[in-house]
Length: 211
Ligand SMILES: [Zn+2]
Image (cartoon, rainbow, N blue to C red; front, side, top):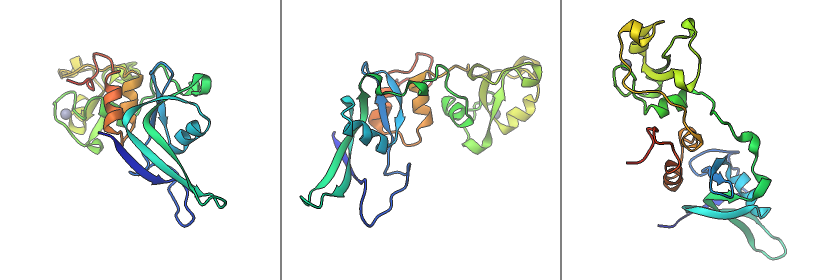
């Protein structure tokens, strides 16, 4: 199913938020080979279109951004951006590429599907904590491979001990999300077609793998 959303890019009377908001989805950029790169704002996507840097498009969703009215012709300009766009050659900002994605609580909780690694309960974000499997006080590192999601009660019970020392069993293993998975984890308003595309690129151990 094709879906088109019309958004006002620029209008005389209105003000639009600089970024975000339910009506301003992020656009997924890929390199020429279809490898996921990063999220860009709709403004940035329009820039790629205007500079003819969009090599090909994917996804079922597109957004039409309305521009200003040309005084001479009376025509209103518009750019239609697809939800997934492949960018030509060197136009992609490679400095945004991280071999290991940055560690944030929100993304850790998302990776672990908001499930406490010790009691198996699922909780909302504010009731969860970042547990260092090997505690920092015992030389444990603050890395994807040494952190899991724990509810406050379990984290308190485990305290500064390893799971073995606390006789608490880990219900699942930590892992480093690959680029595609990280892009899933860090977008709060991911579109269904973007999710479909990215979930085909996640690694086999991912808890975001379909099926
Ligand atoms: Zn728990």
